[in-house]
Length: 606
Ligand code: GLC
Image (cartoon, rainbow, N blue to C red; front, side):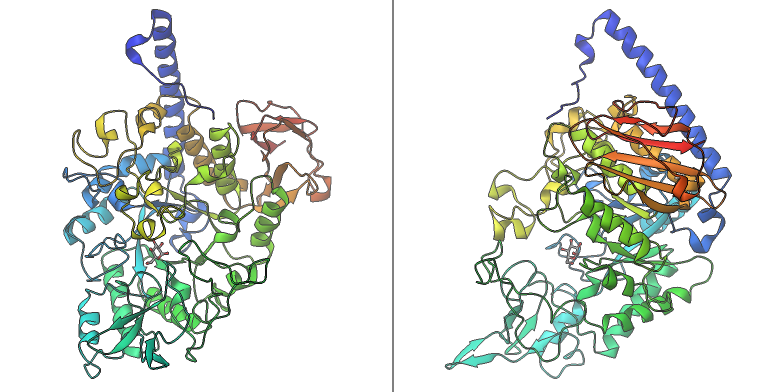
């Protein structure tokens, strides 16, 4: 594995000190050029900024896991004031919006995805006033704040559930999914074989109601009954509440899971190659989710959510869906037949492919990215490669070209025609750091599934701001809620701001290009050299005729590519480099572009 050089100021010799000073100066120059480019871009607003209804198109959305971004009150947990204090950094990165995973009051079993009050802020994270200040400060910097809306389930400590569970006759008796047991040989059993995503039966017995309730996720996250109009009304009120508090949009959690098949019958088992049911990491026989996921009724709710969002005046409220769908047809349906459902269903096919797909599968990536361009009726794709539920980008790394792989992924994410969703820490190359002992695990699935499933702590570690104690996340000496990964001494914002070839500079530059370069901003996309088994290449072409080629070497061997664009109606054969990795050449023509292992080249056709 290629390690970054460890920087040790004390042991630097005089020559090295001078070199370091020169490097520091050149970095300042690079940073100034970038900053002035970025501030120019903000004055000459991009097309998206000029049209407030389109701000989310071709935008960059930055996911923040609030517990882990910045602790402002020395309790080892990140909070809203911490995020506000980092807005200048985020503006410098060039992002358009932040998505906050849930910050509502919660028992925190699923770290906020178990909500006990939808109209407030968990005191761990701050107050409603802190939220309002975050929104106002973000707005000054052209950054929208996107809330996470968890509609499928509440916490079992939510007053709605407490009431619902108290009897079979209370006013909320039908707000959740209650079912009678199945009696087998005089024994009580769950109504069917449906499984929780987090392991074992999705049905939990309630001794008071003498019934089971359904929970797709943890036992402490009972599913709401979306067939009940009162549930819908209550949740649309929540949507309105946060729009009134300035939310720029919502990421709709687990949105495909809202409805279950009313027949309550068993789901078919997923069979392995031996014809027997596959066993998942929790030891359960896998079922196919056909009766519990992506039922057609979801679309009615999406339209209703859209109507509520569209009633707000002044700014477009964007609706993003957590949509782990495996076909482009299902993805297309999520936009609605009349563009009246989701604005941005997440395309999880490109960034989270099925088991077995690796970076060696160039054809697979080409096909999926091309489908997003041609198979969703011209809608805006939303690509995601990283989030708080999956190992970080380093899951792709199989050779010792770690950072190079990071640059390839960032290039696919930002140079494609898409809205790009990134995860905090990606921009400095933060890697997955899973717990090494079961007793250290915080995420309950890591306890249930240990050691096969270590949980999601590894991708939720505190942001690495600097090389001081606690990495600048908490004041030095505070015990942080998850440990700071040892890599913080070299992988951190401050160090990378001073390193010319850092991942952070790659991100800043490519995001700036996505915003400013007409072809890379919203130009049409065409795959090039489609027979190439190692290099993924594509063309971006703007309405005004600007053409940009992008080439990403997905292999650990140097590659050479050439492009003949005459079939695309482009006759120029010269090229001007916009960005490239150190191992790539700076070619004059499209005839021969050399790429190092996992190298990237982006050039404007002349
Ligand atoms: C979504 C969230 C995940 C959470 C689950 C249950 O998948 O991303 O973190 O555990 O929903 O709310």
